[in-house]
Length: 75
Image (cartoon, rainbow, N blue to C red; front, side, top):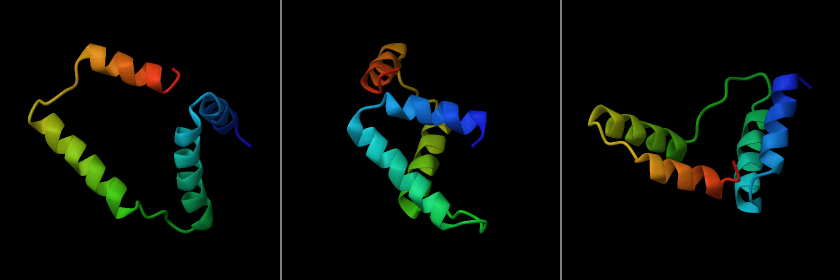
């Protein structure tokens, strides 16, 4: 296991259980792809495209909203 992966797993261990479950689901999908190219699920792709569109429009969250998110994630 690489150091980067070990560090990431340690961070995930500190997340709330529901976030850990989400990370596990994504890792399972990536692992299931094996050496084949991983295809991003459509729901995730749509969320990324939505975020990019918001950024294009200059719609950003406040520093306070980001601080609340990091706190919720245990970071």
